[in-house]
Length: 313
Image 1 (tube, one colour):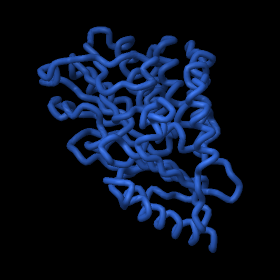
Image 2: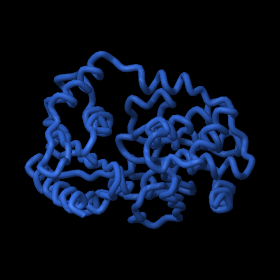
Image 3: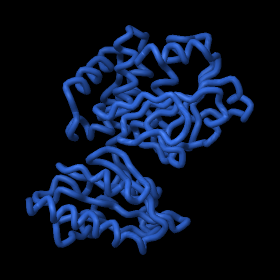
């Protein structure tokens, strides 16, 4: 696998790294960790990271580059392989595109792809590629990659947190990754964020077959002074780890009326439901988008029917 990455990096003098929109810690950590690794191991290369920013920009800021930088360049897309989800569509202007991902999707555009869904985090997949080939890491690269692993593994408690995940994390700590700094950035909360958690805990509902869910209109983010992404992605697991509830879902309205859907399961794969609505992801953690809150009941019915079928087996 490293041979593919190595040959493409050697081939191009300019490399531009993309990831998905509304990046989580894994997307941001993968992108910025890879940028730093290429800088360290291929100092003659130009390396840029592009896309939207959010609260994970403590890992580094995005580069602003002109369109003509893509001509004669390599674009690397991490943690996503679906065109509509990629931040900054200019990657299509590059001479070649490499995708490195760990989701259960197939690319819907022309590219060279490395997709390994057994990795809990794309950051872990990327780090392992370079670790196996004795590449140079420093504190910054290691910290960025470890942030991705920590977030996508739920601090090493989610399913698929394997021995390899822990070995990669240990290696990154030995290279200087600052776990205390990561945890401080990720888990020291503002008062309004803590109150938002309480709002979720007090207001989620449960279907007939024990699917927990929240429906959030666009006023919720303003009520607590947070972003739509925070209400959607950061809050979904407030409904996790409840006895007899193995599926939970979070529906969050965006300013344009579209709805972000986060789906989670403790045991059985639900990615087929996300795919039914044009989404995808992992077996137990996936999502999609809807055109309005009016469509939520359709998704809930599919989840409830599936949960009922599983519970009756």
